[in-house]
Structures are given as structure tokens and as C-alpha cells.
Image (cartoon, rainbow, N blue to C red; front, side):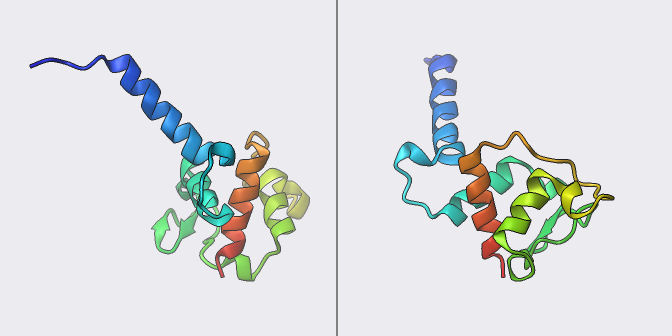
Length: 113
């Protein structure tokens, strides 16, 4: 049985994942909220948060209806500088998320009503 070369296959998979998850300029027809859901998953937010019954019950809060409670600006601040909202916040500041991904993540969380 002939084996396919592994390196080209890995490069193709990485390219597809990078294009579909991290970059919105790849011609995606998905909405910002749909792309934000992919960012939520790729950033492993579920390791600390519950969302629609999926993920962990802590240490972070359930995000299932966060969009009906918080504005987009407050959601963004909570992600990038949680101590600004609550000086005792346990959530670390996620400052390394690229702006397009952060914008999409905020759109996704804001859509959860």
C-alpha cells in the first residue's frame, strides 16, 4: 500500500484551519458571530466557562446568555482586561488574541441572548 507524504498533508490542514478559524480575509461567507464561535472553540474558553450546557462550570461564569446582560464593549473589556471590570477577577487578560478574532469572539458572545 502506497503511503502519502505526510508533510504536504499537514501543511494543507494547517492552512485550512488557519484560514477558517483565525482569518476572516479568506473569503469566508460566515457571519462574525459564526467565526466568533470558532474563536471561542480554538481559544478553549470552555475550559473555564459553561455555554449551552457544554464546558466547565467554573471558575468562569456560564456564558449562555451573556449577550442579554453585557454590552459588546463590556464583553471586550472582560476578555482583554478583566481587572478593569472587577479588580478581584480570576480570569486572566487575553491580550494576544488578534483583533479580527477578538471582534468575532465579541460578536459571538454578544449574540448569546
